[in-house]
Image (cartoon, rainbow, N blue to C red; front, side):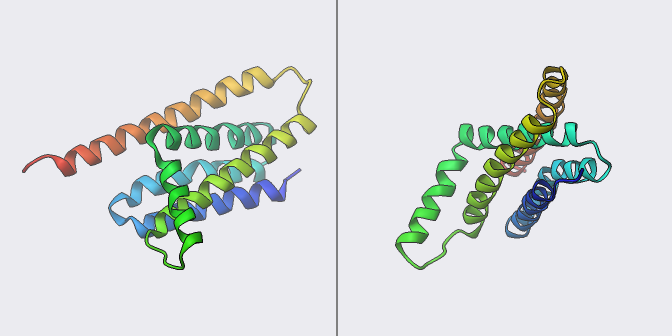
Length: 159
């Protein structure tokens, strides 16, 4: 059964990444690529593959949050949010969208975990589903990191 809350969160995350591509046009394809995993989650929900959609909905946002934590992106996002709350000026809209993505990602993880426990706990497929999803999402983000690294080094290299 299609869970509308998870579909709404996936669509919201997808739209946030598209909005980030608007603010950061030199990384349009990178942000577009970040949104693709949420398109896959929506398609899996639509075609009644909830087990995989829920697990991807747990693993993909968790890896994104971990990646942002390692690179310092989360602290940057929330520093800008605190600055906005102190004063009425919005100096960095992408940081605000990044903070929104982090909140939506955490919500997605919690809601997918709840639905997973409610519908699939005890069926004996949890470890396998988790490991396959972790492998897919890890490969997905390794490609993203490699792509980003190549883009940054190409932009910084002297011509």
